[in-house]
Length: 330
Image 1: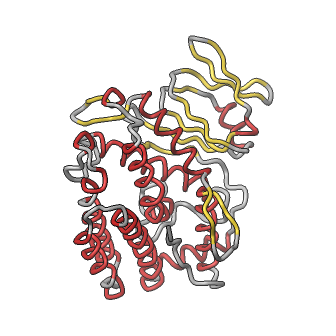
Image 2: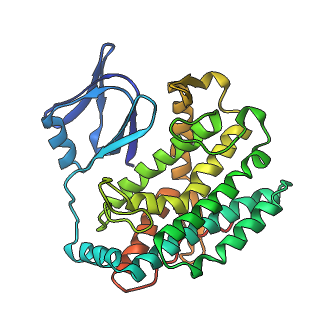
C-alpha cells in the first residue's frame, strides 16, 4: 500500500540506481520508492535533478513546508493522465460566470452541511450549540440568492466564523481555547492545530488530483490567478470539518498532546517535531479509516472518498451528472 513519507530531519535525498535514500549525519535510510505516494518535507532537505527525474518517473509528488510548518509549495511531476478535453471543460466552467458560480455555490453548500453535521454531532453529546447551528442554517438558505463569487466567499466566511465560535463549547479545555481564528502566525495551540491540519489536507487533495484528469490550477471558489494551485483548496473546504476538525477534537479529548509539544516563535505558536509526529500519525490513521457509503453499499477509506469527490466533479464538467458534494451522515 502506498504511503506518505514525512521527513523532519535535515539531510540530502539521493538516488543510487533505482533506489532512493535519505542521508543525514547519523547515516543513511533507504526508501522503498514503490510504496511512496508523496513526500512531505519539514526539514532542510537538498536533492539534485537526478533525484527529481527519478521521482517524476515514479509519479511521486514532493510537498515542502517552511521552518514554521506552513505549506510552501509542491514539486508536481509531469501529468501522466492529463486530458485536454477535460481541461477545456474546466476552463469553460471557469470563464462562464453562471457555470463557475454554480460550482462554487456547491462547494460552499457542501462545506456548510458538513460544518452543520459536526455541530449536530456534538449537540447530541450535550454541547450547547443551538445558536451556532441556527445561525449557520439561516446562512445556508441564502446561498441560492447570491450570483457572484465575492458574495459567496463572504457568506462562507460568516458560516465558518460562526462555526469556529462553537469550538470552545465543543472542546471545553482552557489550554485549547479558540479566542478567534488566527493564521499567520497562529496565536495559540488550537489555531496551530487547525493551520497544520488544513495544510495537510491541501496536500492530500493535491496528491489525489494528480491521479485524475483534473488540472489543480483551475479552481472555482478560489480564484485561478498567480497562485500555483487552487482546485485543491476548493475540495478541501468540504472535508475540513470531518477530517481535520473532528480529528483535532479527538486528539484534544484524549490528551494526546502536551504543552511541551508546542513552541512559541515569531509571535505565534507552532507544533514542534514531537507534536507534528503525533498529529501526523493520527492524520494517516484518519485517512485510512473507512466509511460506509449507502449509495455504493460498501466501505471506502477517507482518502479514497476524496478521490471519488474529484471523479464526481469530472462528471459534472463533462455534463454526465450534476456534482453533489459529499455530506457526512454520522
